Amino acid sequence: MTHHLETWLPPPPADSRLTGARRPRLHPTRNTMSVRFDAGASAGAAAVQAAIRQMDPNTLVMARLAQSWIDQITEELWNVVTLILILGWVATLLATTGIYGAVSFAVNQRTKELGIRVAPGARKLDIIRGRGGDP
Image 1: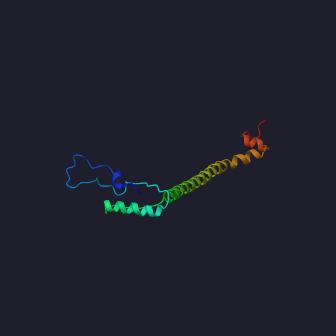
Image 2: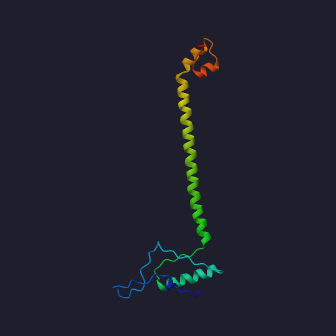
């Protein structure tokens, strides 16, 4: 690796009044550096970690392959998708039960009326239309 990590960091402010300030402090969770290797990514990752720790020993350095990061994000997304599917299934089940209950209640309320229409000879089609036995 021929590039120096010092060149990738922004220069210190020109009017810096702090004594010995070389580089601005890095935020512990908001900084990401991607390094592409043609071969030997595990050895290169160790070299990058060592170079960063040499510049700032208090910086947390975590090296991982891009594919492992993609796999982790994909797994988290599938967990969300699964949750949404389960909630959708429960909502559909509740809606179906509610509609069934409403129709059952309406039919139950009209059972006596339907019996009265059937007694004089109303046909099924007339009952469904709500006309009773009237021509």
